[in-house]
Length: 434
Ligand SMILES: [Fe+2]
Image (cartoon, rainbow, N blue to C red; front, side):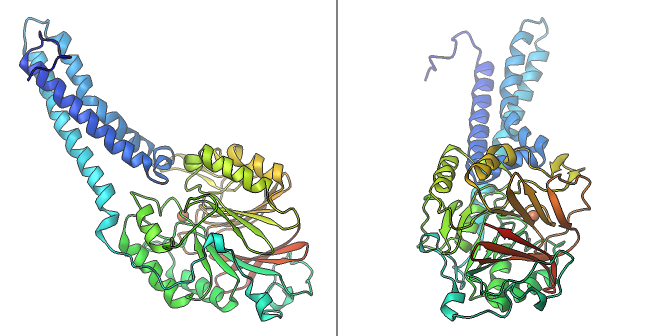
């Protein structure tokens, strides 16, 4: 069959080399498009081994470029140069095609090669909100922030509030189940203390596992959660490690229940009515790669419609303001986030968000900027980040090389933040008016 768009004057070897390079280009583009469509994958191309991931795109164009180069070489008297170039083009077409199919198979089949069963956990369904158990119990709970003197307090402990909290929340992030470098003891201790405290809800802000495409790691996480903290209402966000190589499939198996419903229609960003507070979950695994026009429009509307008499707490995996360091391996700045700050914080400031809690950096830090308070709490067991070489101008307090979590107790008109270590001791407290 003749291919009409291909010049009749082309020789059979030339046609062959063009067809092979077009086939390789198509497969390369399909593979990259599929990877790009996955949650958080675009962040890999910007934040991780940038050269390696960008070369996945560039490789698709190599066979065609070599084929084109062979054409002017045809004009030489000796035909060996053009023959060699066509040979390179054909060989690279085969390599690119095989690599593309292999990577595509890895991305699709990898997460599906193991099974994750629906967990026996009390997963929060955003549309149903959070019911404060403290109100139902009708009394002061033993491990709330009031009175603060009941816990070993840090230097900035705040005066006690006598009324029982309206809402008791706990947050932590970056436990990294499956990483050899994570501290399993710290992780279990933190879970046990939170289970003992019995908050109205516990939020894990992502990087639950080290590599999201590995079912085994999700099963490690579920086994510990089911054993230690089965009855605390739980919500788990998707972090950049959870999203790796198609990890969203297993994340949903583990933490997005069958009857999940959210106001945004997405399992990755939504708001939750927690009675005494409004909680807004954002989808920012590495940075703004998922913060598209749809998410921004939803966030703007949700913030604009929020009840001003209740505190608004925003949660995300990647941070906004944070101290940190320049990663020597990846050559990336892990501090004051150059994408998240300009893209999202103007909305926080415009609509008076009271508190923003994130993970991603493996520190505990408290920061304030333009009237918005920020907490970074990536200390649930992942290997601690090195001592910051950059201290954010917004930073008010930081704990390095400490595992722990954050309790937020909400009272009438104020919130008390208690940063705790893995032994339940209070490292730092803040009292915030709202
Ligand atoms: Fe992490």
